[in-house]
Amino acid sequence: MAEVKPTLPPTDLSATPVPGIPGMLVIRMPVHGDNRGWFKENWQRAKMTALGLPDFGPVQNNISFNASVGTTRGIHAEPWDKYVSVATGRIFGAWVDMRAGGSFGAVFTTELDPGTAVFVPRGVGNAFQTLEPNTAYTYLVNDHWSTEATARYAFLNLADETAGIDWPIPLERAELSDKDRQHPRLAHVAPVPPLRTLVLGAGGQLGTALRRRFAGREDVDYATRADLDLANTSALFAYDWSGFSTVINAGAYTQVDAAETSDGRAAAWAVNATGVAALARVCIEHGLTFVHVSSDYVFDGTSTVPYTEEAALAPLGVYGQSKAAGDLAAATVPNHYLIRTSWVVGTGGNFVATMLNLANRGIEPNVVNDQFGRLSFTDTIAAGIDHLLATDAPAGTYNLTNAGDPASWADIAEETFAAAGRERLSVTGISTAEYFAGKQVAPRPLNSVLDLAKISATGFTPQDQHEALRSYLAGHISDPA
Figure (tube, one colour):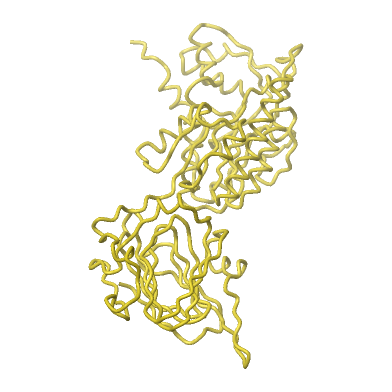
């Protein structure tokens, strides 16, 4: 059982991690006194987040007034984070980690006075005993209390032998409720499960890859368009987000040419812009991490160098414009990962699959040779998303494609034909203008190459696109025997 003894009021603000209970912090704060009394900054967001406290977004402030010494309350693990302090008086506080995992059952105790506070992560059981009369115990929480929320509490008996809390005033002489006396021992407590991740667009190419990536993870849920449609903002707002910490939006309207029609234009904006804006609002209101997948089409392709994450948005067509609008909305979420991809290849219909089909049928296609980029295999995108979340990388925009030398669509087609046993010369390279002459189609960016330095700096190294292409083709070409 870890214990920290109180000291004289500090002259500097500090935050110290609690040994054995991940995410829990002890905060010491200056208390300024004179003949009139004292003053302190009990919660100062800018200063405290700079020290490492989570920007946990409190929405409710509660005060428990305790008239007598020995009043004892807990042990309760609520489904929210708490910032606990004392306005007047002094308490002995006890905390037990009741989250599933290796720290389950870890115990920490310390005294709190007006110069001390603690940050208590969701799922850590909280209890206290007053050491002075007229003690005002106060706490900020980042979710609103409701009767429904109490069903997600976890409780532990104050006298649990495993926790072995050394209460200053023995419990038989303390003031506590009958309900607190009846709580179960640790051996009978169901660990508090972690907050969950929801993958939207789980039926698409990227959603399928995320299912593979997170296979076996019990803390990941999936929703297809039939389950939760991005175009239905009412359904998004009505969804129960209370058990989630992260939303991965793998859904989008991707019919680039159809987006130029009246019906397609409305559908593209409903999903890629309005739906994303609604999701962003949900994430802000519920304090969720938002992973949103975007596109090289937010650029006009006129750059002579790879596009960095800071490049100015300049979409050419309706699809790109709707995606750019979604990007702006997603970036309003404090903890967001905006993922920019290009030339996506995954399970189902895609350019490489189309070229392989043409090669197998003996067709010799014309393919544009003046658009350059890198393929983004969905397994690479899924691995990159997993990496950013698992490493708690800094929030922001990240380019995420496969690596290696850029290529044209004609180059990719030639590699595909060669792998299928056809001559590279079966593919004829032509310009974009020639290919689309006389057709009503969306404009395409000629340069779709995205700079990968930022995501590489986080420790993630995407596979070379040509190696990934060979692996993909090897898995999709039938054995001639």
